[in-house]
Image 1 (cartoon, helix red, strand yellow):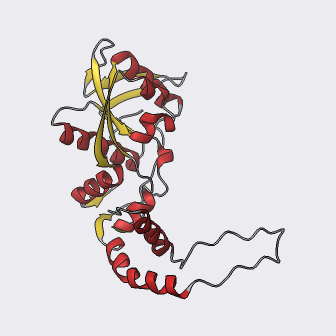
Image 2 (cartoon, helix red, strand yellow):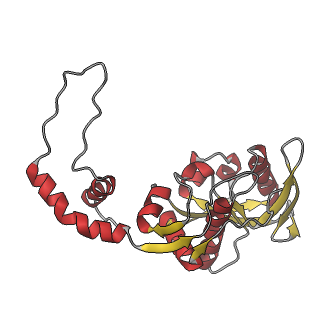
Image 3 (cartoon, one colour):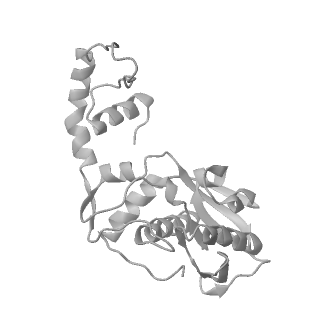
Length: 238
């Protein structure tokens, strides 16, 4: 959406309601003073503000319940993991077995009301793209054990129980028992695949496909397609 650094900087300024960035004044240096905002910059930003507010105020969906991340599963976690897997299948024109993402990628929960584009920029502020990894069944087992060790995380396409030792038991991948010798396709984000999340198994995939699709755009499209977002959990992690 923003093709230049200047455009992105203007968005940040407008979205935050600030006329320009100022460093925080350290408590131990009360004598420091900063100049007033440059009037030319303020005037330039004011010309962009109405259009940006209209854009960020666009309605994407209606939130019916307060939904967030929870363990072993949460409604918002289910939504984002499903969105990644379904979009990966659409982009690759094939079947994608698993979707996964860490909760630390997100900044908000959703409360009842209108979900706007501005909310989604707050929800997913990072410039990540969609990645599809090839992993064998043993690595998928390892990945689900990592999810179980956390007490649960956003996943799609899999079902399992967390046992007393915080390991994944009875793993089903799309209703089938996991096959250690089979290859599976796993949809995630570039950040997670590059080592930025809490799932080391993702970093040892045997294949990788980077897709030129923004994760933020994936969520925007998926939430718009849902129209109404509710607190729905299907027992995928128990």
